[in-house]
Image 1 (cartoon, rainbow, N blue to C red):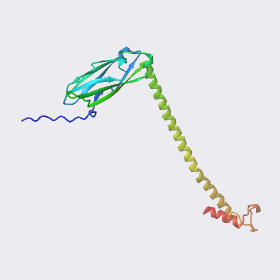
Image 2: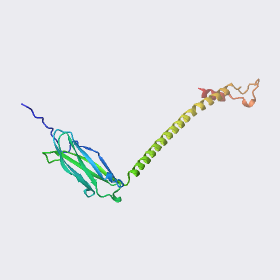
Image 3: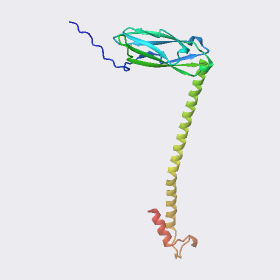
Length: 206
């Protein structure tokens, strides 16, 4: 006796929807882009039915806006932009694909695809290249600023050690000078130090 495979129980909204591409870009100066194709895939072992919704249906014509996809198959959905005007440049529209098992009414999965009308493919390419150059320049600027800060920090940290060495030399020289009251000395009198001054120098040396 053959056992039938039990189909997974589907909850509304949790079925993954596989569609390509996920973004449609129409160029006003290129009529070949005014028609785009969405491909809906059905990797499951049961048939799917689908419906295409749009936030601005008056701007687009969707061929086969509803239909079915057999198991392990795919279907192409043709979308035409029919309102190519400058006032729509840069406006982001959205398509929503709702799918469900063929025998059910509720949508078990959905996927959104964004659509944008741009004035020119060349202008868009130039804009992307300019943005790339700006990002690279900013990255280089940050790199050089960080390097400069690191060098300043190293210089600042080296300062106290040089000062310490200099003070040590001065204190040693002070200890080697004659003390006040010594008569037999070739060192001038104004270089003779008191006992207290020599104690301070010895204290600094540690």
